[in-house]
Each structure stands twice: as structure tokens, then as C-alpha cells.
Image 1 (cartoon, rainbow, N blue to C red):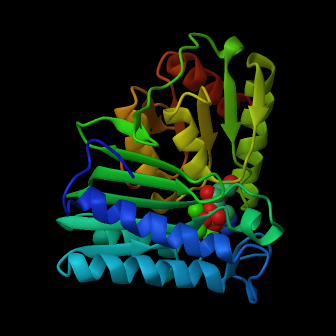
Image 2 (image 1 turned 90 degrees about the vertical axis):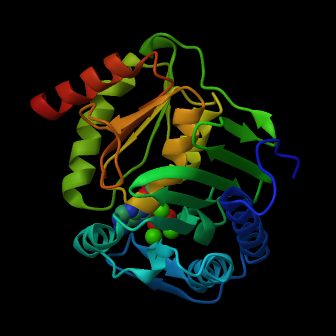
Length: 279
Ligand code: 2AM
Ligand code: CA
Ligand code: CA
Ligand code: CA
């Protein structure tokens, strides 16, 4: 991979190596996974591929950086409380790797080819490296704090649309009834205002697409740090904006996220707020 900013055995090089290795392996398992279990609800799926990929990434990282901390989705008990608590306990660590081995497990299980590996490194709570890899398209999205963001080694930048009306906006449909209701309200408010809506089923990949200028914006309720952390840096380093759903700055604890090319952010947030009040 000829990614110009990345050299040597940097944090970023390790993140890329992990994402690429895990992604290649996940791809070989598409349509061949053998175990499927439900975690928290019938919408909350996990396979041996999620667990195997996380183990692979964790091992690769811990060999290189044994003193770093590691937060991976499959190492945490299911459900929102346990994941919030796990983050709470770890977010002040000096170096914390935040990993979603398969973002878009439902897609993976159904053979819908839109899922990703998401790897972030936070330093004292701030994301400094973000890597999202789409093994099906062999697309690697990489950002390093202060050094820009790249796809296929080419500089990425967010899209130019200045109004929601010209915007292509993505969302995700949450599992929990409360978040599902909030999302339907937002959808009802946003859909008539924009060019069209997409929902691919991988939050991390949606965020990478905002960074690459393929989507103008993205919102979703009820996510976790491992869904968003890597994508947040991709978007910031591509010139976009990431906040919570009411426009407050992004931090690792944000669960309801709104991201955009920046130019539409104020109107985007204003519509999302209106939908929350009037819903
Ligand atoms: P996952 O595939 O890693 O679980 C799709 O809308 C997004 O929601 C994906 O990023 C997906 O991540 C996440 N997701 C799926 N089920 C979820 C659940 N029960 N709770 C929280 N997030 C979930
Ligand atoms: Ca999951
Ligand atoms: Ca996820
Ligand atoms: Ca996952």
C-alpha cells in the first residue's frame, strides 16, 4: 500500500496491517461462517468471524505495543450499559486501541457486501489514528491526526454540496426501540429536505464515505465508540465535521452521531433538533 503519510513501524502502519490482514480473512469467510449467535436481541448478531478477527487484531497490536490498552466490541458484554462502562474505564488510558472487527455483521451474515474493519488509536481520549478497511472493494481509508486522510494513498476531501437539498445523506436503523423511534422521527424530517437517503448498514463505512466525498452527511442513534472513532478522524482530516446529534463536539462517549462535509452541518443539525422536539 503506497500511502504517503505512513512510514516505518508507526502506529498507523500497525493499524493498516491489522485492518488489511483481518479484512482479507473476513472476506474468505463470506458465505461460509459456521456459527451465528444472538447477543442482546434478535438484531444483535455475532459470528465466529467477528470473534476471530478481533482476536487476530488484538494479538497483532499487543505484540507491537504491549503497554497499550485495547477496547474491542467482542471483548465487551452486550448491551449499551456494559459498553458505556467499558469505555468509561478505559478512555483515560494513555494509548487506547478501539476496534470493531466487523462493522456491519448483519450484512456479512446475509452476504450483503458492505462491511468494514474499523481501527482507531486514541491518545488520552483523543483519536490520533483512524483506519477503516472495506475488504470487498479493497478500499483502505486512513487518517493520522494533523496529516490528512487518504484512500488508496490519494488525499481525500469531503464533498462540496452547500445545501441539504443537494445532499446525499446516510443513516442507520438502530435496534433499540427508543433509538429506532428517534431515528424514524429524524428520517421523516430529513428525507424531504435532501436529494436522497441511503442506509448501507456499516456506520464506520458510512463515515469513511463522508470523508471521501461520496456522502454529504450521516447520522445514527445508539452507536458505540468502536463504530465511530476511526471514522471521526477520517472526516475531520478530510475537512468535514463530526458532532453529536445536537451539534456538540465529538468525543469518545458520543452515541448519537451527526457527521457531514461541514458546509451543510448547521442546517443538518437544525433539522435533527427540530425532529427531536416535534416528534
Ligand atoms: P455491528 O455490525 O458492528 O454490530 C448499523 O446501523 C450499525 O449499527 C453498524 O455499525 C452496527 O455495528 C451497529 N449495530 C448493529 N446492531 C447493534 C446493536 N444491537 N447495538 C448497537 N449498535 C448496533
Ligand atoms: Ca455487533
Ligand atoms: Ca459496529
Ligand atoms: Ca462489530
